[in-house]
Length: 94
Length: 401
Image 1: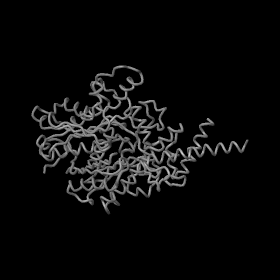
Image 2: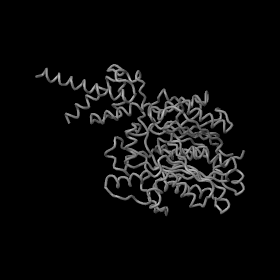
Image 3: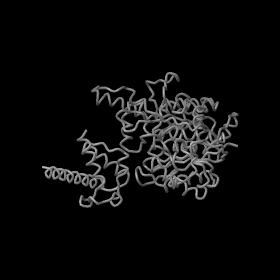
């Protein structure tokens, strides 16, 4: 049972990661395979306005609210995926 | 070339209803930033603004039905400036005068209200005054009508540089001899729910206060109000025995031609250099800069670089402050509020501080006059405005001797 639950979580996490990377690729107008979980925003050439637009899309997609403070800490795709997953978790708990 | 002097000042902002109230607050380093009251802020991620509290247009016999708040502010400031200048516009002189104002969003509160009724409340009609109240030139037209000024009258809209572009144009019109007198400045009233939500989405508004150049700065704080200046040629002012408050000596503009919101140090420096060239002065002569200083991470660091590029070694000596820390960022009206602060600083030999400053930032290593005004006689001062869209406008003022 425990195993199944963690599988489910991992499956969901992968889906979130895929969606986050898709949103970033769409914003930067690059093929989706150019965005990986290990890409940094610097490597992707994301500026502050790209970031604002991506955050806006993420909030809409996952029905979450990302504070400016949280957003400021994030420097790469992995942190962004983890942040989104944690906010989705908080929403489920609430 | 003719010299262009300032003979009247008017200002209304969160700090006060007239120039003397505003100046007193600026000298004290008192910030007017407080919880937003005119709009229900419960649905906003930020809570503070710099609002003009308890403003009643009836007190000023203004036709509130016909004028949005931003145009009411423009009229109030223009009346104060004209009264101080002691000028009376005759049929003839009114035709040789100009009104040039700046505004970023015009009467968007009127539009917001009308569209809310239309889309949300299902009202099939909007108020017939929606169009004339919303137009960005409503303030300029109101001032023109009130003083019967029939020369060049228009409004410049270049986001946060609007007022500086407007005042620069007015300065050049007077200097070049196209007009003898100009009323110029700008106004803004951005506190409507739709507009505030749009600013929230930009993620540039501080969740607390505005701390320009401070390491712990978290963004800008929106403000509202208006300021107006009466400009005239030196001969015209002297002929009628007017009191001269200061002088405009240079105006420079540039465009970053780059990113739509990210400022460029080179672009900003180009405008400062152009303004000093126009004034025929060297960087060593600039003693004070009223900075754009919005309090965002990006602006203040970029403006610091720009000041170093434009002023060279003088960047270490020049006193710099952002009065937005006190009256907030009045967008298209900002340059006008800051022009009044700058003229008063030159005239009184006291430089207003950067309020709410708490922590030095190595990326903003200028003399930013932290928290307390400073007695210092300065001859030349610069006032910076840099807008979204990459549009920069800089004025150089001189103490009148």
